[in-house]
Image 1 (cartoon, rainbow, N blue to C red):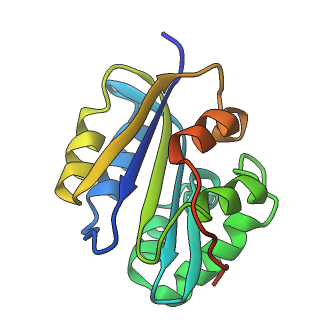
Image 2 (cartoon, rainbow, N blue to C red):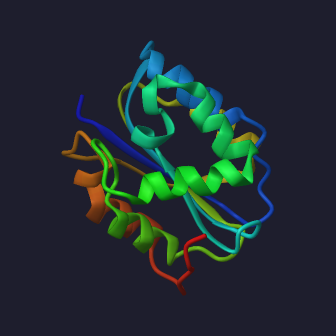
Length: 165
């Protein structure tokens, strides 16, 4: 089965209570699905601009804590965003992250996941609890989100820009 790209959109006011982080952790265990890559991008009203975390920077050192820090601590969120935007092994290119960010209004977010295996049921349930919606679900010839850039950009469309935190 080829890798599968799933892209979710969250409108302003979406509430993230840790369900996405938990679903990502379950996918990393690779029981029914195997997580290859993930990216969360938001136009963060708390910092007035772009905030982002990809799997490579959020899971640095294999720590669950980095992803929780991004979610819970605005100061760490900015540091994780800076690390995500900097060139790093396994990371999503800054240009792709910034292009995604231009499609977001203040408070909105995009969550993209690349996985293999069966349905991403736990993830879909977590997205639903956060009042997000699936905007794309396609097989892709990619092993990382960086390789699925055109499909990811097609899924998110285009809109006015936002600045980085």
